[in-house]
Length: 271
Image 1 (cartoon, rainbow, N blue to C red):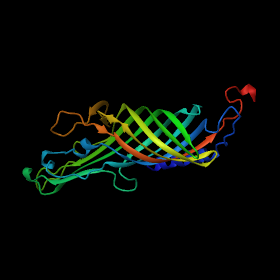
Image 2 (cartoon, rainbow, N blue to C red):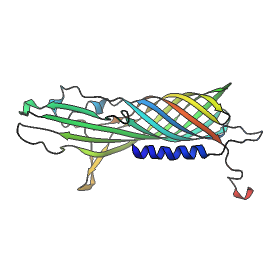
Image 3 (tube, helix red, strand yellow):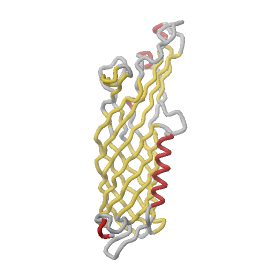
Image 4 (cartoon, rainbow, N blue to C red):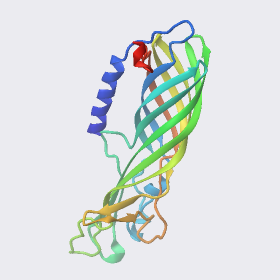
């Protein structure tokens, strides 16, 4: 998370340093731009929420996380006043940054004669890289936009499991646990928004939308066998793989700044 905050600070500094938009009579101020986004998401993480490390966990209601946050940056290009493209990247977090972002089970495996609490914890994060085709319409100082497009999604899953199988015997350090299990898939993103002009070159938008972002399989390796990938399974007693489904709805605030590239940027000889 700290690395993400540092990267966002660098992006904001570049954002503020961009030249203001200047345009000729046959052009318009919003042809080129960049945007920063911050928002909240709802994720369809039912399978991750329902993971149990042992059948004795099945009757225990786990802590569940469906909400999360997202931050991102996009480049804007509008070859026409009412049509354009947004190409960008968003980091997706499950849970609220600064709090415990984990799904957890706790149970005493009494059927196995254990007397100490066993635990299973999982943490999820992801990202999306997208290209959205946008339609725009003007209504005075407020602009309405709608769009959709393909996206590439990644998901990362960490798991820590400590099982006490019998009384008086220490649990293994981390049976069936792993770090940085990852996977990716193609998906879709769609959104609609209203943008308010703060200045002729800056806008603030409220956007809502949804994404289809199911990563069907995530894989991991152990340090001693780095060339052998293992698929994360649904449960210890299941033969099905565990998907990480980041599909769901989102709402976010978007700050946009429009600029004009230096004259002759396509052909330096024109400078």
